[in-house]
Image (cartoon, rainbow over all chains, first blue to last red; front, side, top):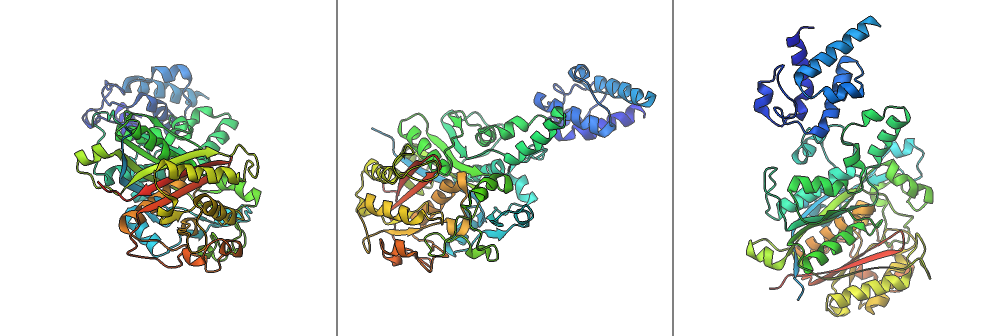
Amino acid sequence: MTNEELIEKLKLIVKPYVKNDEGFKNMDENTDFLNDLKINSANLVDVILDVENEFDIIIDNESMEKMLNVKAAMEIITTKLSENDRQ
Amino acid sequence: MNNRVVITGLGVASPNGVGITDFTHAIKNGISGIRFIQQLKDLNFSCCIGGIPPVSEQLKLQYLTPLQLKNFNSSGILYGCIAGMGAWEDAGLPINENSDTEWDSGTVFGTGSSSVEKLRESFYKIDAGNVKMLGSTAVSQTMVSGVSAYLGGILGLGNLVTSNSSACCTGTEAIIMGFERIQAGKAKRMLVGGCSDDGPYIWGGFDAMKVMSYKNNHDAEKASRPMSATASGFVPGSGAGALLLESLESALARGAKIYGEISGAAINAGGQRGTGSMTAPNNQAVQRCIKAAVENANINAGEIDLINGHLTATIKDAAEINNWAEALNRKADNFPYIHSLKAMTGHCLGAAGAIESVAAILCLKYNFIYPSINCEDVHPDIAAIINPKKIPQTVLENNNLQVIAKASFGFGDVNACIIFKKYKP
């Protein structure tokens, strides 16, 4: 999966939670979920559940804490997917 | 001196009508909202009928956002939001998520049990070791104050925001709590009401107690029969009712439409002594509650034109009639008109008092008495106390109603009674 494809998938996942359409339109690797998309911090756990479902991965507590922006999310997803591949 | 309290907005999600227009049409025409429910049959319920407000997916989206509806499984909160937001808008007040906090507006919005479906869903996830899958809204949906918290956020309420709970008294009690808060000058506007979930998990306990009707599964619309000789238990209902209460001063200042006034009220309990128990009323307490409400309203019992009863269609209906007759000292031809909304909606539990109060205020404002359907065969014990003509079988229009008494009684031997009066400057 290319980075562009990954961002497109993430966009679909976060869309229901986004409170700032402008930030969503310009969403890229540098986008922060809370500051740029104005996602309610309580909803971050829902975003992570949706990511787990979409990619069929399990995100541990430590990774969850880091998943505050698109870049971190992409790294975590990529890492978990490669772990799945090794299994 | 206490502030006068008037009603400036109404909202409702009832089995026989969602929204004030549909609900008014339904009650005037004696339209039942009771239906056969296959799910209850499949689960081996004795009572396979019930009342559920007709709410389409499209209608839901008029009240809650797609995000609020994500992982949402709380019919009571949904009905509460439909009724509560409806009452707020009916009062001519705006709903805007960017508005300032309304420091002088609050809510007391009750429920008997909160979001049992969401709890059930959560328990299954927890037991399977998947607590994480509860997501972010399991708490806000299942906390008892869920409905008031949802409404508080949608409307920007900055005064008291809470949910009361007193079984089938809940809706009526909420109205009284809001009334007293405005009377005391602690708030200008209070959104008050009650809601109840639908479905087998909320109704199952009553089915097990054998207090629900099981003889009329084949004829749903005829099944709820308050005051009838052939009453065979209550039919379960669900939904929500809401009133926007406002100080008279505030209502006049903004030129609001006034439906009527709350002129007095009373709450008490029977202590589960005498004839009272967890599930049965202490008759002495019921009579004291009615008398205290009349006294609080500073009226004579003779001024009451209409009683909006609790009257569930169980064996306790005759005892209720006797309590009204004793408390008001009015019998036979001298008894006021009386009717039971539950004949059309079933017993909406925590929402009952609120939905029934909405119906009472519509009668008061528009001068009609809706029929107490399914009571063509008045119970002989009731006919021995009052003239059966006092129980209208068809709608009575152009009836200049001045005073309506509304009461609710609940498990735990708790009672609440309100006196609604036509507004006069």
